[in-house]
Amino acid sequence: MSRVVPESWKPLLRQYLREKTGEERDRLSAGDFPCGQSVVIRFPDRSYVHFQYAFAIRDEQANEVAVFTEHCGYHVFPLGDTEVETLRSSGVELT
Picture (cartoon, rainbow, N blue to C red):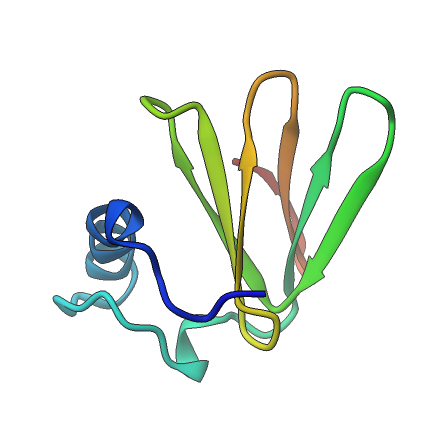
């Protein structure tokens, strides 16, 4: 588990935070993780991983998705045939 955001992901994280908070930063705080939101990653072999208090950012050029979690750092997965779903207590949004 890593808590230090790699340089290659900082521009996308900065953009995400600018859109969500209006702030120009590449460091996360507890308030960046919406209560009641989680991310599910489903793999082609039907296995999956579910992260609580998380959000996902896609990097289409690198064909990767990063999941940032409040308590478990960040995780990067290949996109390929992977499905990424953001779940919210008030509904479901595919990302």
